[in-house]
Image (tube, rainbow, N blue to C red; front, side, top):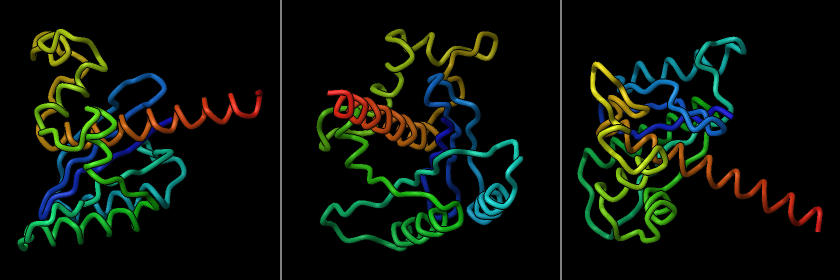
Length: 170
């Protein structure tokens, strides 16, 4: 199951293709929003596109009870466009934090650590080096946020399938 996740930004966004069954990052990149929108439309139209995905999940802007500026409004605008262009779904950051860390009051460092631990507790090996890249080599910043969304969606989907199987067999 290929999960593609996007961490939207006001001008550029991060996108990650993640194989949820193999727990493997296929590719991750940051793109200009207009270019990303074109890519999503192209992938949706071409059944044989090399970056085809099973599920598109876009991080939704959650309300924190504070005033938002232009950048926040632009990010929300792009998130909606990406969901529509790629026939995707949205997932809020609070849900990501809650699933990975057990609390929505955690910070980005906690989320990064929780995601990285899916590949091992030695974070230096997980990241690796240019000479010996680890499974998350080059996954930083917004790409890590997009990966967190992909991992959470894949794990929740796997849990839902196990629950359905248990319920149907019980």
